[in-house]
Image (cartoon, rainbow, N blue to C red):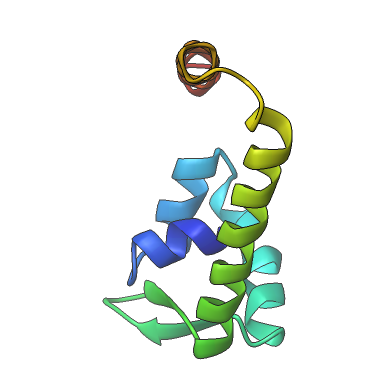
Length: 102
């Protein structure tokens, strides 16, 4: 969610829910938790909708997530030949697309 909100500032809970396959009502406790930890803020958008934005703390947390992700990528794939890595990434994307079609 943090990464989605970073790339899509002003998104709604419904936008995030659709993107990650979570029902809107189930998003409420997740968003509330991120807000109570100071990572996310909600501002009125239109009607009952609220736009979501990362706070400064949320932006710092996002940077940490990206850093850890890159460290894990190097750990797991650092010694894999680039051609093999690209093939693996194609397979992973295909699996993700298949899962998203469900």
